[in-house]
Length: 305
Image 1 (cartoon, rainbow, N blue to C red):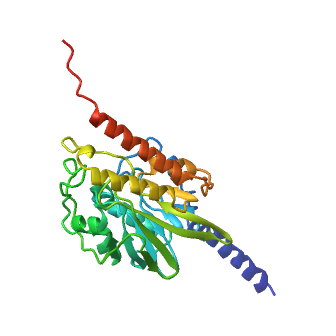
Image 2 (cartoon, one colour; image 1 turned 180 degrees about the vertical axis):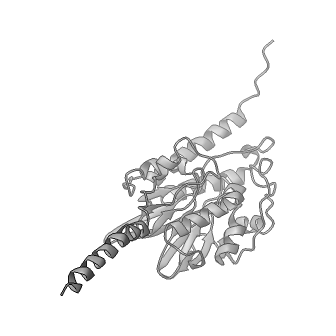
Image 3 (spheres, helix red, strand yellow; image 1 turned 60 degrees about the vertical axis):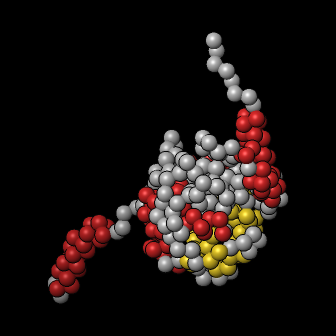
């Protein structure tokens, strides 16, 4: 008759001893991830690590504080746009995993243009993911050597980067397919000969938005290279700006996030649609090109006596 209370007391003691151990075995509470604006406050280095953040629906930012890399996802595979500098490849790979995706599910890697700040990490990420690489002809020629030729306005400034094999050469208006994903490549030469912009549609339920990853539009040239000496290049640049202004563009993303104030726009969740974002971006590029040409045409200033 006395065995029942003794058993009950013993069981209660065991539970009491076990409870702290069980409590300690629970996984620690994971703090909320900082937003890009918070993590990159006063930090914009090309290799400065940043957390991943959803831009909208199936479109994620996985780049660094200073250079964009964007992952467009689907259950049948993903597309990565841009890879950052070579030193940032590990950071981009970690961000893909931290966002909840597997590296070997990246089917394609594409890029904005063939400079080391956006293409330097391509070889490393291609190797780690097993993805195929697609690029426009002018970009493909540079990627396979890692050397920027003299026809690029910035060639004298640019350092070589790891060469990488290109699996598909794209042309203006072609669509890259990965499962249900459809990304359209737009040739927008100007900032670089192989500059490429990308458009696709991302949907959250019935809310669908026209996403536009638009390449840089700054008319920059190293000493000794003058836009005025290359009228065909200038004409192609102007045509690119017209093309950019006409892109479907509910959400604008740029290879340098600060060029489109991306982090600030993401500070409170998905960015609000900005009507005419690509038109404004193209207009700024046109003004910069005109300013550069005007400076080139101005007579050299004589030193003061």
